[in-house]
Length: 120
Length: 129
Image (cartoon, rainbow over all chains, first blue to last red; front, side, top):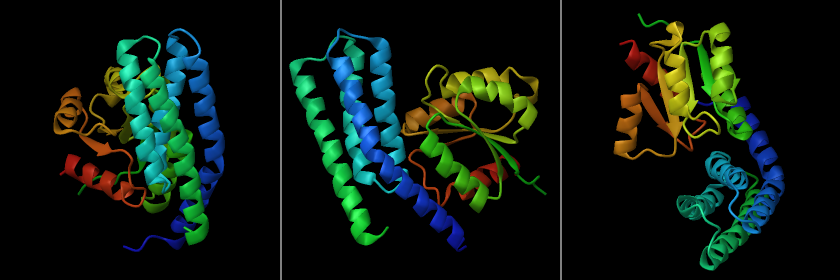
C-alpha cells in the first residue's frame, strides 16, 4: 500500500524540526554532563543526563539520524557503567565520555549537512 | 469477525517520539490515539479514554512500563486489555520476560513510523483470532 504523500511530507517536516532542535539538545546534554561530573555523585543529576542521552538514542534513528543514535547508544552504555558503580566517574571514564560528546556534535553536524545536500 | 481497533493509548515520555508515533498511528492507521507522558498519566486518563490496546514504553522516569502495566491490571476494565511494550531491549530473554509480565507483544525501538500501524494491526488481529 502506498503511503499517503501527505504522511511523507509531514514526516519530513517533523524530521526538519527535529534537526533544528539538535544543537540545543546536544548543548543541554553537555551542560548536564558538566554539572554531574563536577560534583560528587548526585542521583538526580545523573538521571537527568542519562534520560537525555537515552531519549536521543531512541529518537535519532526514527528521524533519520541513525549514526547519531549509535553514538548516543555508546554514550548511554558508558553512563550505565558509571551508574553501576554509583561513584564519581574515573578519569578514564571522563575522557571517554568527553570524546563521545564531541562525537555527538561531529556526527550531528555531518548528518545535518547530509540532509541539506540530499534534501531528505 | 474481529472487532476493529480504533482507540490506542500510547504511553511515552519523549515528546519527539510521541509526535511521530501519533502521526504514524493516526495518519496511516486511522486510529484515535491518546498520548500519556507517564505511567501515572496513563492510570489517570485511561478509564475515560477506554483504550482497546495500550502501547507502553518500558523505560520511563518515576514509573516504568512494567510497573505501569502492573497498576493498569489492577483496574478491572483493563484486566485483559492487550498491552504492547516498546523498547530497545529486545533480546529473546528480555522479550520472554515482558511477555511473562503480561504483554501480548514487544515492538523494538527505534520503531519504523512507516510500518508501526501495520505492526499494531497484526498484533490486534492475532489477539482476536
